[in-house]
Length: 116
Length: 115
View 1 (spheres, rainbow over the protein chains, first blue to last red):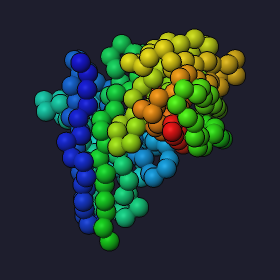
View 2: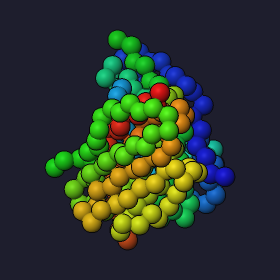
View 3: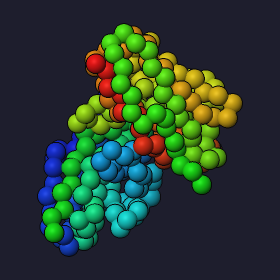
């Protein structure tokens, strides 16, 4: 079965320091991977996606993600964290065979806490 | 350009009742997906509508049904509500195309509480 795992419930980082939010996936073949962010009482906002090509994907608000096929990982990164980055982050994979806009399978989410 | 909108924002129902949630997709989008997000969990896919037909369905019982209208807006209906149906219901819109995989854009959600 296809799945996504986010091994950390919470990540704490000081403002100005680099941050990493981890994600691993289990999908046969080439995966389509996404990161979303959710602020309190809000819907999900799209950050970035990996389809194919360059393993380093750049997205919104200074975020980037590194795709590693051998480790089946798609970790979210930012060189310098801001307090305003504090939110809930979700990694997702598109279900194989679900088409261009089909079903997303989400991880459990990781709460990012950036302290001043 | 309005993004995805959902109504109502909050809803309180009692067990056994029925509820209808509404969604208007982002301008130019033709596909609507619905997700259920329980507290502390990631969103779970309920179903997807395109061209007024249900195209994909997740592991949800028949009590969950939907509809898509010619203007691409959509409704999610839940019958015989259970306490476990309490959750944030998210609508996401996207555009089918022959190009590469497209991201889904999410609305703010409807918070359903079942008492």
